[in-house]
Image (cartoon, rainbow, N blue to C red; front, top):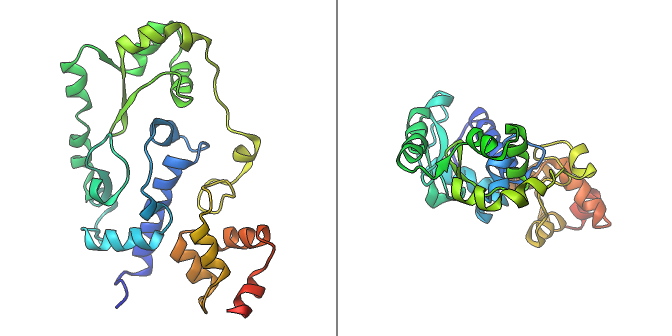
Length: 235
């Protein structure tokens, strides 16, 4: 029996999955410094299979009829990665309560916000954001807010002030963000074997199975020295 989900529900989950992937793996995306740039990743089970993400969502409280603000993907441990054991579907209010960022800041004098880091360094907030993205300033992400250790920033101040802003390569900067990007995420050997041996599946079915766009599959087949016509006829 297949997973019971409507086309609109599947598309909504696709947007959630794509946004999660972009935050963790696409340096061009604005939120990347707070996620992928801070070491947050997506487990291999979800990263390489949109179908696996759908299956988990349907078994763990995803409601395609709920308002978007009432059914959002939340990490239980805001320091942890995106994986089945650390994620849940909840509303925006619960997500906000899960951050606990203000309590941590108030209870620990050593934890400061980026505006306070900028003042400590005598630099702009933009400087702090760029140096955080390139890893020059260690930080912790709690929900959607970022905290820094004052002691660590003071100790690393000379090195931070000498650090340079990291910029994405021209290839990454030029490529379209999202699932169809050539540099979006590396291909695995397992994925390549799936597209080289489609076993009667259509290219759209393969795309859904491995979480890629059909254009991305065409490009990979060209790099492997073959075409969709060739592999589909040999199946």
